[in-house]
Image (cartoon, rainbow, N blue to C red):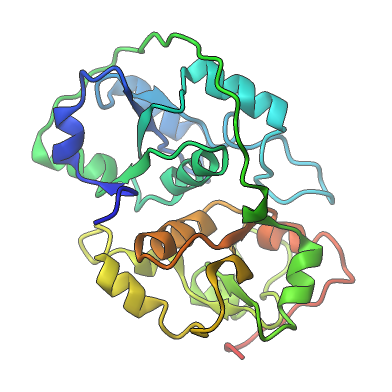
Length: 284
């Protein structure tokens, strides 16, 4: 298993290690206060709470951005420093679902130049099931002076995606569940369907029935239907708002296939322009 997925057992061994930083990324789209309330009631000792809307996104600009636009870099850098993140840090992230929110923070930290970042396998549920320690103390962090070294090539724009979807040397991947991809149901965004030419790899298929990450071998098998001659940097993943697409990116990376690009605005941004095409139905 690569260093992007880490077991609860290994995390337990490093709870007192000052070089390790643990983030609790629990969040509910239905109730944005729920994750933080749960964190305050109990979390892995020393864990810092990372809020999807407040820390990992900036406010939505209706008709301009998607639902979870990346923070402005100046704000994000301030957050990183307040958290005490350093290049030498080993960072572990968990949530209480299957890693969808945790993967967003994983991607953002990797994009910012941090090499030691991992999502905890099984998340909060696994930690509790094992019976590992929990407390409600809010950790005091010592600010850092971290200067991000951004990997700008990991981000693609709507204009890029519009070109890539028509180019056989590129692939665009929709990470949402199939029913949303096909346009049969759209519970969140005002327009149903998908970007024409995109193929569908629902992010939830990266985990087993027990909600643990599949092995790198199984993840490689999952992505083997993608054209073998298209390199990672020519593959763009998107989802509804640029969050759970990161789950697929982590899975692709975990499989040893490289680091593909992210369309950060995703479907909720794509549909802000009525001139951008929309498709429904099965995969091409």
